[in-house]
Amino acid sequence: MSESFSVRPVILCGGSGSRLWPLSRDAYPKQFLPLLDRHSLLQATWLRVATLARPPIVVTGEAHRFMVAEQLRQVDCQPAAIVLEPTGRNTAPAIAVAALEALREAARAGETDAILLVLPSDHLVGDEAGFRAAVVAAVPAAEAGRLVTFGVLPTAPETGFGYIHAPGDGVRPVEAFVEKPDRSVAEQYLASGRYFWNSGMFLFRASCYLAELERFRPDILAACSAAIADAQRDADFLRLAAATFAACPSESIDYAVMEQTDAAAMLPLDVGWSDVGSWSALWQIAEHDDHGNAHRGDVLARDCRNTLVWADERLVALIGLDDLVVVDSTDALLVARRERVQEVKDIVAMLKSRQRPEAVHHRTVYRPWGSYQSIDLGERFQVKRITVRPGASLSLQLHHRRAEHWVVVSGRARVVRGEDVLELGPDQSTYIPVGMKHRLENIGAEPLQLIEVQSGDYLGEDDIVRFEDAYGRG
Image (cartoon, rainbow, N blue to C red; front, top):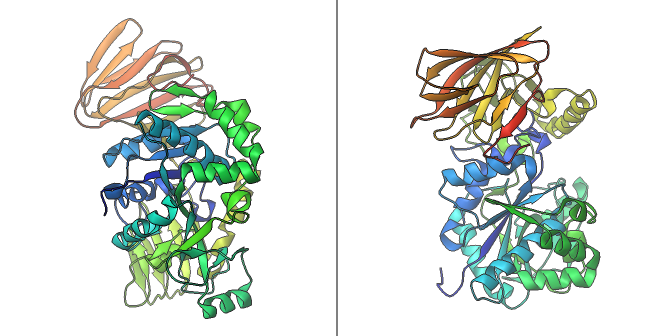
């Protein structure tokens, strides 16, 4: 790695990953999941470039802001900025606001430009050293004003990806971007050796991208410039102006810039890349046994071949099955033939049309202070298991229609209860009547675990009146 330059990663952290339901859901999508090892896809995205890059600029949505901050904190990453989109507008605007913020950061450091490495947050790379070497190899072209994309050497006639036609050697000009082909065309692409999967990863100068965006889509650039000019800086977050950004056209970087510019270039990648776009894609990259089975969790299989099983909490047993995907989560079970797992998105659409919570939330719901899990729910009562991170606290709040009884299981809690302040340890409890102001804080060095029993005629999460909140929630 040369010391003469460094790159600024732009990590795009949007999307819902609906094809990986029931693990991936709107409130906790696939980029936050540890699919192959202990690190989430977001964490792995940063770690694979941390040694050659400056702190990243992350673009995400309001709902996921605390998950982004906490997961990056866990791997010792302090982002240069976490840009919050009030609504998703696809990759061209997301990269534009990141480029504008990167130029602002460069100016503060006395520099005139920034080299951006644009990375989706939900991809996997097997050969991380090879990926870093490819980034280094592409830097001279980016410094010279090229908009470099990374094309993945195809290993199969994949019909779920767009392709890049770019014959030549090294960093070479792009001749064409091609839409997702049918099977026969994909087979021709694979045989030719001149077509590559479009990875959605890029390297270029911030100024060059913005110049090409102004050339081809000045409306997008104008909206993004206005949205970031009126943005509000809130602790770790940069909140784009909602009305201005909402008026921005929604467009991908491919359509807005890459398919039109004459500065597009491509460098091939052969690094074990996957977009983990489906359960079959995860099966392909997972570790298999001698019969092609990839199993995670407590799984027993007899006479099974080429199966993928994900067992979250309980034993899953299979007998005499081939080419199946079984995903057992705490509140939903998916069983599908491996060649049809792309249709999982249709199940998610059905759940949303019926307003089923399983499309959006897991049984474990994550909050900036920790998480809670609904254990039991009935008429006029709900039981939750609550986990509060060390040093974290819930808002000072009250409920108009429910009372709460807290029992500490482990850790140390400080409880504000009306005018009283209590400290509770394991096996100690307190009662919060309807309408009483209260707050829960973890004052120990370990996670605080407690059981909460709610009772009342309405138990919805919207029955919360907040008076003080460390996380800026209303």
